[in-house]
Length: 82
Image 1: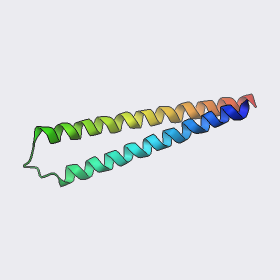
Image 2: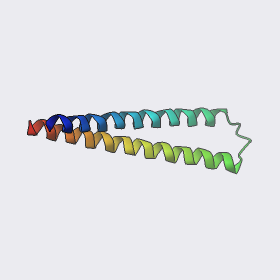
Image 3: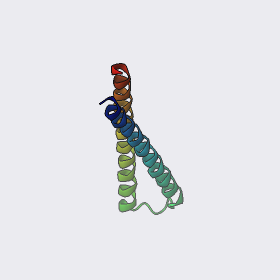
Image 4: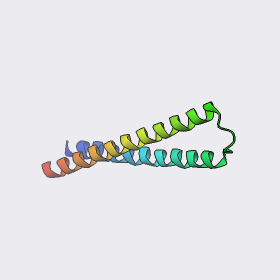
């Protein structure tokens, strides 16, 4: 039973790491797109896509941090039960 709880905790921790790494990848891609887009081409669609991408990256980052917190708290609780 304790091993199952620890596996669930580790799964949450790994999920948090994956979400945070994905968010960092999206952010770096958005920075590259922003740097490559000429300043004279201020199309509305490009601006909306960049804003939506940043919103997506921030939500991924928040989700990853929450998963890390949940996994860490669950791991601490399962170690205390042991």
